[in-house]
Length: 302
Image 1: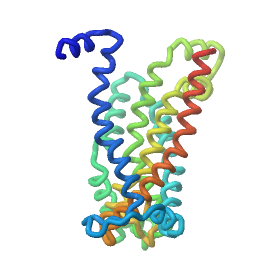
Image 2: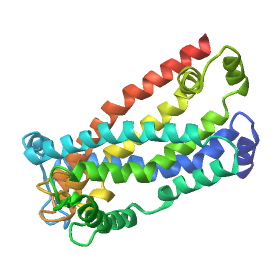
Image 3: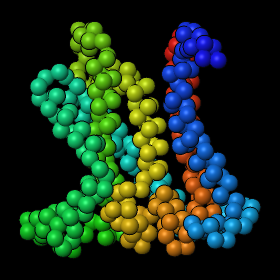
């Protein structure tokens, strides 16, 4: 048996499966099994204490469609994603174009912009909460002293809470997008820019006619990963606003947490919302993925 395994591993056409096996096993244990368990739990009446387990059928799903709080959380999640993802990608693209050179200044700037990415969102949320707090925050204080603006409390105002959460998320994550796009820009052949300069193209024309078209695969990757991440927003809401004020920043993941792991501890209903959220993520991300794949396939054929 051992000889057969060794023989299988040394075959060139089978070696790839050996290297993929650990990742596939982890994916099966921590993604596929929890997904199946969530689907099963979603059709049951089940609390976190497993005190009264009953089959509910589609009751949890029907309840979700009639739940105003679910629709509010879905709306907040989509609003967050629709604003945060484009702003982050555009900002990351502009900064990447400015710091893509190999100069010392560009290297230092890239390192500085990447620092928030490696910091904990919980820690960043606490810092932003202190800076923007209406009582002790530095930003409201200077706005009052310098501009005479009073009553600022960004995370506690229903009209500014979501925008502030989005701004904080963009500030933390745009360095990730910048790093990916910097690599893409550095991979563009210099001949393209030199030839365009001979033809009289300026920097702006080079950016729109050369840089952006060459970065489309990288931009597509950033779009999909950022979109999926933004639809699962939780940490910043939990730390800064707690879903408030008046549930103006309550997102789907936060609502799932409040339903399943705080009173009423309804795991069945929380799992049903999780499955619905998965369908929303697939509905929004798969069209982008297939459009990218089709575009790359056509370019390869061409």
